[in-house]
Length: 280
Ligand code: SF4
Ligand code: SF4
Image (cartoon, rainbow, N blue to C red):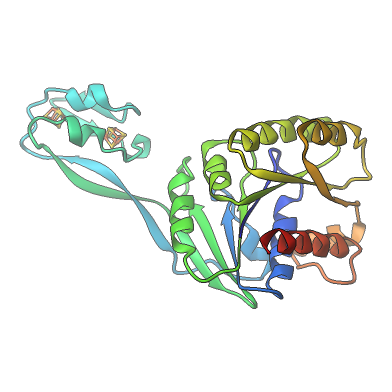
C-alpha cells in the first residue's frame, strides 16, 4: 500500500504526521518512508539519523566536440536556453540544462558527447523498525523531480507500507508522487489559506482519480466549517482532527517522535489504523 501525505501549504504539520504514522505502522508491517521534500528534507531529523553516503542523482549534460560546425540547431532546439553561440563556440550553461538530450538528437554532425552533472542525492537510512529514503537536491538546483524519481526507484523491497512525505505546493514533483500513491492523505489546517490550498490539492487528486482523505491539524484553532464544507462537496472523508497541543509543539521543536504522553498520539494511531484498514 502506497500512501502519500501531502498538503498544498507549508507548515501544516504534514511531515510530523507522516513520520509519526510511519513509525506506528512499523509496529504492524515493513515500512519504507520516502522523504520527497527534496529541497528541504527533514524526516531523518525526527529519527536522529544523519544523511551520509548518498547515491548521486546524475543528469546528462552536453559536451560539444570538434565536429561542431556552429550550425546552431542545438541552440534553437534547447527548451531551457542553456546553449548559446559565443566567441565562435557553442557554450553550455550546465545549471540551466534539464538533461532532456534534445540537443544531441538534433545535432546533424554527432558533435555532442555525453557529459553529466550531479543534481542531487538519495540517502538510505536503516532505522529502528523502518527504512528511510531521503531525496535531496544539491544547492542551486531547482528541479526535485529527478531526485524523487531516483528515491522511488530505490524503494524496492518487500514493504507492506510505502509512506511518501511530499513537499508543499502542487508542482510537478508533488504530482509525480501523488500519481504513484494508492491513497492520498491531505493535511490541512482551519485557516483561509489552508482551505484554499486544500482545494488545489483536491482538484489534482480528483483529476488523478485517487482516493483522498483529509486530516485537519490544529483543528481547534480556527473555523473548520470551510474545510468541512469543501470535503462534503467533494465527497472526501475527514479521517482525523488533531487538536493544537503544546506538548506536541515541544516534541516537534525537539524533533522527537510522538508517544503516549501526547494527546495527539491517539489521532496518529487512528490514522495508522485507518491506513491498515484500507490496505487489507
Ligand atoms: S540536454 Fe536539453 S536542456 Fe540540456 S542543453 Fe541539451 S537541449 Fe538544452
Ligand atoms: S547542432 Fe551540433 S553541429 Fe550544430 S551547433 Fe550544435 S553541436 Fe554544433
